[in-house]
Every structure is written in C-alpha cells, then in structure tokens.
Figure (cartoon, rainbow, N blue to C red):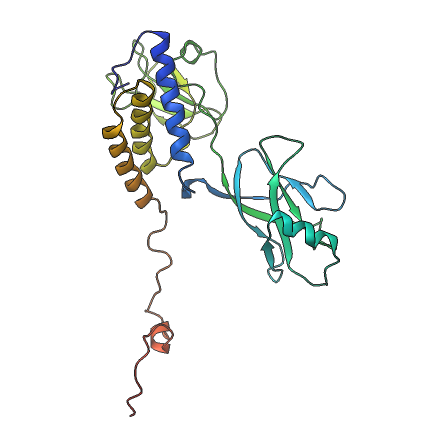
Length: 281
C-alpha cells in the first residue's frame, strides 16, 4: 500500500491482496529456510504392517528418520527402489529403508512408506522425523470488517490494539499499534493496551525477520506485473533483498567451528594439518 497509495475500489483491493499472497508464496518456497525446520513424532500407521504413515498437512519435505535405537541405519530410497525392496525378504539386521510419495487418499498430503519384510519398525517405540513445514495460508489481513468488529477470534491469529479512537496500524503507520498478542497463546501479549482500544485481527505472518523485506519487494514485483508496468526496477530490488535474506539465513553462526582450546586439539594431532614433505629430525 505504501508503494501504490492504496485504493478504495474493490479491484484495487483485490490487486493488493493478490500481490501479498503471491509474494508470500514465492519467498516461502524460494529455498528451505531454516525458519521452517522442525521435527515431530511419527504418527500412527494406517495399515496393519506398520509400513504406511500419512504425514500432517504442514509437511513440505522430509529430511530424515530418527529411530529410537541409534545403531539402526536409515536410508532413503526412491519409490521405484522401494517397490523392488518390497518384493524381496531382507536379511536381519538390515537398514531401515523409507520413501515419501503423494498420498492417494488425502490430496495435497504426503505419506511415508517403509520397505522390506520385515520393516524393522517396532510399534511400541517412538520414531521421529525431521522435516520442513509448510506455512499456513494468508487469508485475513486486518482491514476486513470481520477483523475489526471483533467477530473473528481464532487461535493462532494476531490481535493488535490501537487506541480508543483509532484502529491499530503497523509501526510505520500513522497510528502504530499499542499492544499485540497471539490469540490463544498464553503470555504472548506485548505492550499494554489502552482501555477501550480498537482492535484488528489478522493472520500470523510465518516469517523470520530477515525474510520480511524480501516479501515486501516481491509484492511490488507482482503489483507491477499485474498492472502491466515495467518490472525491471522492482525485480532488481527483489533479487537484492532475496540475496540478503539468504545470506542472513542462519541461527547458530558460531556453532560448527572447531575449537583448538582443548588439551589435544585436532590440529595438534595432525588431523587437519596440510601434508608436508618429510624433512627428518
């Protein structure tokens, strides 16, 4: 809205909503952002052989399987290899072979399948998997009538408080919000809401701080595209902001660096030293 000046016509509002939706989708799917890395326990199987597991709706892609026994080797296979392994009886012990395919009974979801006979799955133990989650859809943006009259109060959405005379806006707006909270999440209130403050409810933007500017730039690109305007300048800004976002996509910048302060450091043992000629004593 800052770029376009907003608008009072339905067509302009539809354009703004479409640009926001497209921009959010493009940035969220541009790479496997660390913001969306998580893990969960394997759900209950859907078959009696403990081979097929339908994954939750928010699973975008699966990274690994973590069995309760660390001596068990897990190995991902492509679906065609899964079928070959499923035909034959595997020796015991053998690696835990698994694959992920689209679910045929629930469109839009993935299912995990283990191969072989036996599979190695112990139904009484907990198996975990690490994956990238799919962010929730953006539906309510806070300016809709239902978001301002208090008729919507869904857990997980964001409620912002303004003042007794003005509706809340962003921090860059004329009337910045005085407090905000995530509905249904205890202890999430930030700030202090004035008595009788007007409120606005919107969907939670599932983004890290360094991704936010890239989303704004992507929205400007989509605005220009849908208005048949020149997109070269907006695209250049978007590409720059995406590069900065990708460079900042880290959560533990110091971890993983080898420490040489130990009594017997790896370099002292010669493990990471470059090879040198043998010069004698």
